[in-house]
Image (tube, rainbow, N blue to C red):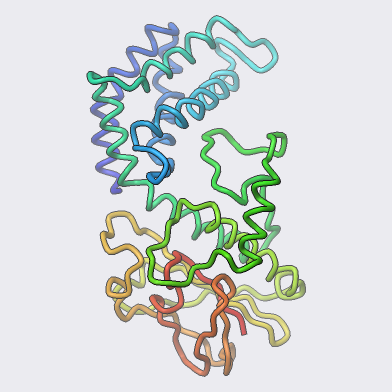
Length: 314
């Protein structure tokens, strides 16, 4: 979704929401600052269309997410409430405002507008999240992950390690992956909202890091060049140490691309492999498949497959 579309929707809805929030809480400053941030983050969030309609999702999930975000923002602003001295009356008014804004009804144009916007934005948000996760787990630095974030997390506030985590669900999903009962194979379209997708990327890359400790602890970082009609939509780099090499390729700036992730859309876009890094054999880390070696380039469409990112190792 393009920024101008977000700005149009924001401009149409913001004034009325600001006035309503100021009326309910008596705090115009919070309305213009904190609600603006919450509104943007909510619109740029994710939802699962398999489980519910966009409007239902916004009420059932975004309601709690927005409530948490607005309470946290108000307390950290320290104007009417704070973590040390919470103002219960003010926070009740704030939470009531969020609930009323998201209340489904026939005369709720705001909710319908946001639902339509989110339904277009959600696939791109999920794609960006998976690409970011791949970059995070292969870039130089510590690959820390908040506990529980192996699955999709729809919170708007900062994650932390104090929340309860359903470890049984994650262990069951991991067993499904390990037992070969779930895979990226086949002709069926990828359901990016499936928790197995994010868990697969996380598990495979962390396992690869564990088996290649020196590569990630001491390996060089080398940016790679993308060529072709969609080169600006690719970020790629290599990590190399003592004969070990892995190459990360991720999509970027995909908003507005109707043929997201299709072979035709990527066309002849490729990533150049320096001769000194080339290998007779390569293997994809996330879907465990072999990639042709002894080649000066990797075709982006072939390497990515159904995912928005890939890691290939020699």
